[in-house]
View (cartoon, rainbow, N blue to C red):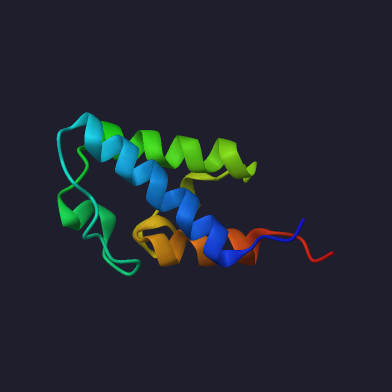
Length: 89
């Protein structure tokens, strides 16, 4: 399966926006390279929900070791990690 980086980033951005709205927060100013937990837009439950959504949506099968800031800390990191994990067609 081949993933489009811009599409992945848009999907992640939309999910973050949805989660932030539930907390009465506007995530529109979040940049692709901003560290999501440090931005203060999502609480810990929303961050966990984002990770679960990401794992399930893309069928990654994340391991405990892969759940870290380097792989999942920003929109860019999440897109890059997914593309690196996807098998080459």
